[in-house]
Image (cartoon, rainbow, N blue to C red):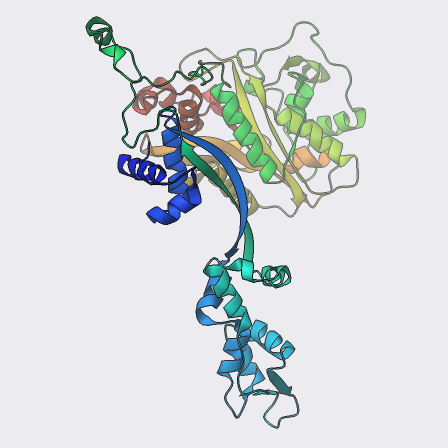
Length: 505
């Protein structure tokens, strides 16, 4: 509510007038801003029938910032005229003045000055009249005094065109006395208490009318899952960076695309039953690009493309086994093969979707989680490009302290683990893995020899990502979240990796 003193001053002013008064006149009489009076009127309306109001709209002319400057210091053309001495002024010096360009043009149009282009010292500006009348300033000063009615419409529009005037619509109130008019403010009661009923004092109290149209407190309702909220933010970051989303709707994948196409050997520990969910029905896949499969088989068993391969007996029966995909890199392999079948153009792909591992469930492991993956294919990409993209990507997440550590992956060389400094834990935490796809993976697909592919991946549920999402959880759920309790939970305590996990990474 507005200040009680202001409200009573408004009411005393209203008492002295016959009929009513306009809120703009009240603002002028009391020497306050009109919006303050509008607030006071609304406060009085809330008190009941103290006043009656009718909203009005009116238009008036108002000086712009530049218009107020001219009303005070003179028009640009007048300032240019006054700056020119009797012996003239070089045009280049005149143009350096703050009002030079606009003032020169207007003064020339008014024939107050002339330009001597043939002057021996270069173009020079001279006065053509002794004195001038600054009509622009005079007109603006009339508007400033509230006498815009003395100007013709043509003059106003000309000043408006020069952005010195603007037409403003003002909403005001016509205020009259209400049926319960009084010059003193009596606080209205908002609650009927048991004490009022017992004593009978409620009969003398002035109660505020109950607003049956007021909105009640919004009931709690469903929210986006915090993980999906953060996923949406990751997706938006990739789109801002110009990436295209890959189709990831095939949870069931063949071992060929999940492992073999990535130059991951068939005896790799990650392909064992205790690490991967194999499908019993249908157990085998049968449709593969035959030429491509032969090239994959050769690079595994015999080598090629500058590699000696793994030197083992590659079996199609292993490649045919269906499984729940263990990473979305299988989707990246499909997309890169598809890219190789057409004229190559640089691409940037990303995916965020579920993957599955045959893990023992505990505080740090689930059988299902979300993998985030980014892939960039172009000529001549290096490890430096990968680091640059990673810095850009993680900076958009609010993660700026990064470190890189050499690592091993079957299908990338060189490979790097990405670490971020965790402000909550006060230590460096691994947030992802990255690398440059090996030629043994890319060249059998048919990609040109000069093309490099950089890639990185991380889990949506990673510890640092959980900390990043806590602020969103607070916003979504509307409750306080104890961050220290989250930091102390087992999910933040990174367990030592066993050999199988190291090999599968």
